[in-house]
Length: 543
Ligand SMILES: Nc1ncnc2c1ncn2[C@@H]1O[C@H](COP(=O)(O)OP(=O)(O)OP(=O)(O)O)[C@@H](O)[C@H]1O
Image (cartoon, rainbow, N blue to C red; front, side, top):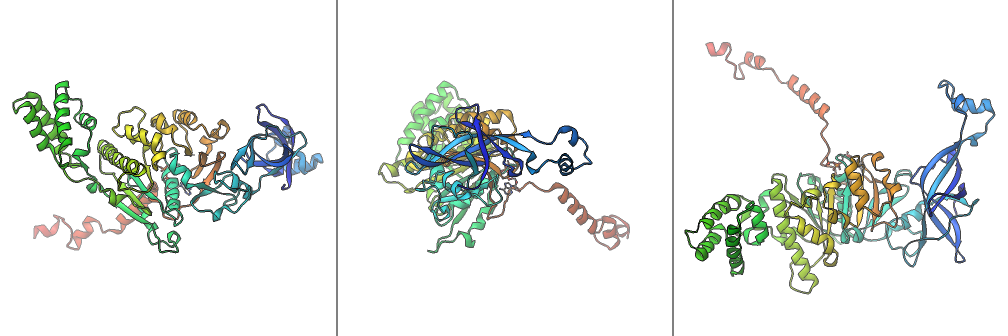
């Protein structure tokens, strides 16, 4: 065991809790991982525990400290106190010992006895056992493993001392949530994970649904040396701009059309549904509003008033919306491929069109994955991972987005079909609770809003109360990682991106000052007029 830094004093309040005492110079922070040795069924086990609280139990008397002009060392020297005058009482919760057969933590079912020495858990041990990497020992060089994502390092340790790697397979198959207040580093962290998934040892097939155009700089991965494989691999980053995002009309369901037409009457619904079914049975699936209206007229007659009203609505809502097309859709072959990250740029589409294009695309992708897994012909023979910036927009808790149904289906069943979702959001309380609670791995960053904190507490079961208490105090780039990809939650500093960050907020003051300087350097209108330039109606026009 490493050098002891404290000694167990006795049990704590909770069943898994104990208290230990340590001198001040050890400066152990809450969230730190400590270790002790205990015999379990005759075998010595190295147990890990998380520090949850610390309080000063003996320090210099307040009366002496009241004078800010006198330093604590002087007070201590005056009192004849030695260096260990300050003592801390720390509470810790037992995480467990690493069971190499189960490759996760096991509960030792006993607390350390008073007097047991406590040490800081070694970096190498934590790197091996904190994330769910399935290691067969409790201390190995995890950097040599394939398919892992280096996300950052333990926050309580010095920069880079204890790196944290997440198993990519785990978070892509059981879904991921990245939750944080605006400006706390959500898209930064998502980009770090994307970079890791596009490395030569993972070669992921990724789709990024980007409503704000925040992922433009991922293109830097192409051609960058750190992304190149020995066999010539390099990631392909494909941007799909809004002009290329189309929904083929025949791919809409009758439910989508009813929602698009904004509450048609019962009579209209009946007419539309029978014509729609007839069109879907037709051999050619490249039909538009004209063909659909002709079918309704064939069934109900050209004079039918409901058909007339429907025609008007269909032309206004579908035919005049450039998103819908009788023929064109988003070719799946163009957007999914191993080693390819496709960014669907939706920034110029309104929210409704963003939801519609996403709904239809997700349904198609899901169907292809279902066919692939069931042994039927499929155009997507490999697993997929789709990331949603503004995730609450596509799976809102109010249930009013057409995309919600397919998002729920994929989060509840996608695992079986190799289709994972990553939800990025600044409003966890606005995400559908079913979708959020199905996200097996969570990266949670600074959150101040109480409603959002509650939503996290309810859905992110894996992160215990004591860890979630840290949320308001985090700064940008700091995160709690919990869930399936971890054996126990940990507080981390997310590493720096390899590509540059495209979503930084603008430096307003700097931009004002620069604009002011530029303006001062430009000759003024009257100066231009003096030189015979500009559009002055001054003396020259009088000539
Ligand atoms: N891990 C990190 N390392 C260094 N800087 C970071 C890190 N994470 C975030 N930042 C800084 O914080 C800023 C905000 O991050 P980011 O753009 O990801 O926020 P966001 O939560 O996505 O915000 P928004 O909701 O506005 O999109 C970044 O521009 C970057 O400067």
